[in-house]
Image (cartoon, rainbow, N blue to C red; front, side, top):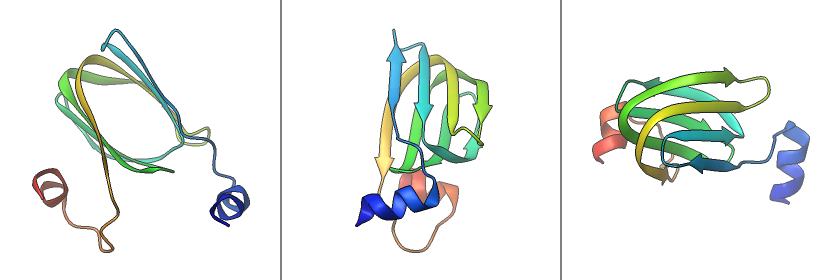
Amino acid sequence: MAYEAERMRGVTAHTVTMEERERLCVSGVEEVESFDENTIVMETVAGTLVVRGSGLHIEQLSLEGGQLQVEGQVESLTYEEDRGGRGGLLARLFG
């Protein structure tokens, strides 16, 4: 049932590929909610993904294709569950 709903929405598969903790490629990206040198928050078909690190910058973004490429020192990748209502960025990062 979930597969059919995703297929009907035209959602692409979600993959995460990291090379040497310095290059990150993510597919299935629906929206980039916020980003700076230390944190990138994005909504993917698999939930909210938070990337933390240093010197992070977005090399390529294609929302039509759902592709995102990041360069910089990646320290962590965290998925967050949808909590019903969306809180602010600080609530999601520290909640």
